[in-house]
Length: 475
Image (cartoon, rainbow, N blue to C red; front, top):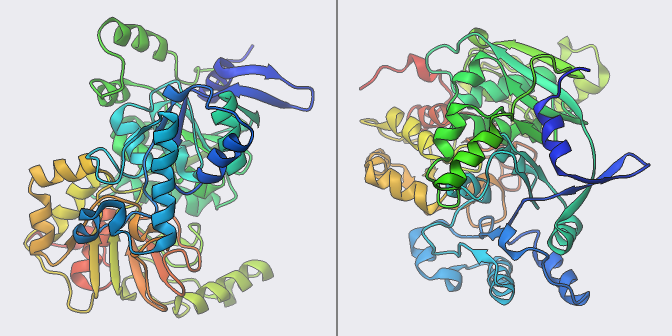
């Protein structure tokens, strides 16, 4: 019998019952909740006169609707200008207070983006099944966990039963061999992967990321890659547990301590694919060939190396793809065959659940240190992923580097990743964004999003257009 993949093992550990139609009931270890998808779920429980099955499995924090300017945040919920956003955040507080759910509220030092807070607090651990009413819950798979986004009705179901109805996915291995060139980041790696397999390439699969590049990658880098597994069409992305995982988890607030830690490490030691495991699909990339990536269109798969040129639809024989390129060029205000490094940016956003951790802050600060924001760039904002990231960055003096360069240092939250708060693009503006999605209107009506790494976003901010950050001499 062939060995098992990491996904197979995680699935088998959590199956409660298997049904004849192929679906199964799986047990959920951790439920992360935010203000956007939870109100209806809590109201459903209330109407059905039910209580959460296991309150201690739930951790909550507001993130999508919280303002990120210091003045607004000082007022707490009262400082939220938008009435709908204010109601959503207040409702989360009320529901958590009523049910005794642990919540990191708007001005709690531990508040932040759910997909940053979970791993950094140790609420999300190796071997867990983790859910949240947000597609980018796949982030936590970097810990060697099965972590998936769920819908609002499923949020209610998990709260009430601690279980989820799901069908087992197929197994895909994305292997990146060799070594990355100097200056190439995890964001470049995952954008290159999506550029190769497309946004539907992982549909129906759980993706395991493996190979030399991921074995050498930091945990924060792995979190970035698994975060964007959803942009490749998969519901889950994951990386095997190794010493890097253990070093990251050890000492976290909710991580096991003492003898319990030793027992946990022993259990986690098997959280990797067996050497003879069979995958349904294997995709291989050469890490040495990956360059800094920039998305040019309106889908994460519309991405190219910074040295490239925007596609010309006349060169595309497939009528559907040709029409897609033409529409994307029109929306993005770009010309066919235009050089990527000729694309000017109006705004810069460094943050989101993809790239708002301390390593991201350091990478961006290293680029802007001693430089100034380009006069043509209207705004460059840096938004840490949590209060703890903000605290650490300020202890290292990174905030002062950003401010000296003309960048804004903000309070934690989802911010300009999506147009659900005060931070958004105006019609026609181009943004160098470290976020994960570049769909039409994602960052604001008519806004034009270019997905890049923190270093590339910072470089665009000081130059005014996209540039290979590796060519910039240190001041």
